[in-house]
Amino acid sequence: MAPLLIVTGEFDFPFVRRGAVFLYEHVARTRLPELGSPGQWQSAAGPVRLVVLPWTDHSQTLFKPSSLQEIKMWLTRVSPAIAEIPFSPWAFSLRTQLRALFCLLSLLIWFPVVGLLADLVMAGKRGTNSEPMISLSTAGVPLICVYALAGSLATLVLVWMNPWERLGLMGGDYLTGLLSITGILGLVALRPEWKSMAHRGRALLCSALAWLILVAGCSPWITSEFVHLELNSIRFWRFPWIAFSVLPFFLFDEQVCRRVFRGLGAWRVLMFHFSTRFVLGIALMLGFFVLRNGQFLVVLILPGLLLTSFLCWCLAAWIHRTTGSVEASGLFGALATGWFFSVFFAQL
Image 1 (cartoon, rainbow, N blue to C red):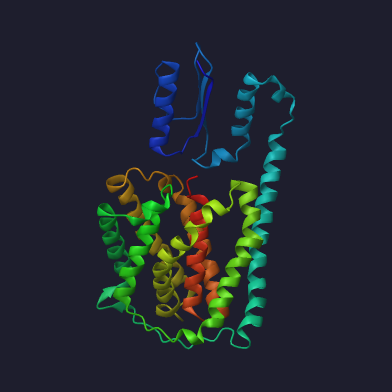
Image 2: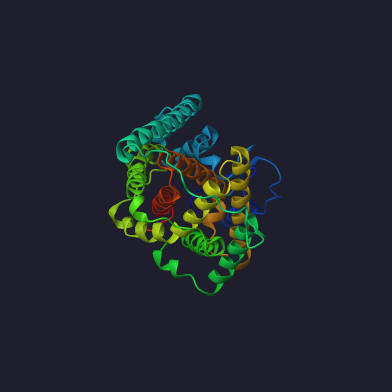
């Protein structure tokens, strides 16, 4: 019997806990009680062990010292030399917190750097914002309903066809299609007035350079310290297709957040942003549980997706503040999302 170690969290997804129990029972050929509390179970006949960590969700098992301690003890059975390698849970926690702080500082430095970049590129036009405001409703339909209806229609469309499946993404193809169709339908409903792009060239250039600074200067620290992924030449071909696909959504979203709610207060805009992501999250969950059961990855990392979406939205807000262009902030959001999907969703 091959050695098997399963480490999961007390607050992990229900289907993940059921999968852990099924795998343990199948390999150990013994029954387990329902995993309603943390604990440790190990088969008497073979090296099969299941550990449920207390106060831990799905992704926390990657960073908790107790999880790594279990892995080290288990690997010692295979290679006793591993026991000679020192491991301190306290030192590991300290290093993890320092790495997280360093990554946060790298992101904070991005804001003043982009501000200086805008001063150079915009040449005195920084922060110019003469865009007209848009009505708080479109054809009598509240804007939050536009997100809901567009997301629902996008879910139905993806049942019949999803051209983005050819990108070879693990869950990201469905999410790309959802954002693309939602954005197109939203722009059709909103019908924004576009200014001549000849006057937006510097703003778009500043947006592209700001994205390049983020990807080349800040993101490598995060990916190398925590997820150990990068956008190599094999994956890069997906990036322009994803960025172009999600561009309508970010143009629509930026039009709403920066023009419709301009001057109405930061808290109101923030609450509206969270409401739209909640609506899109429901559409995404509906597509997973009812229509697209194979796209499991987007559900496992949904909390991380929401956090990353909020971070991208804050960065795009700074782009709009420094350039005064919703096209520039929308382009930045599309480029950042295209890079994120290409790195974290691509199948080798």
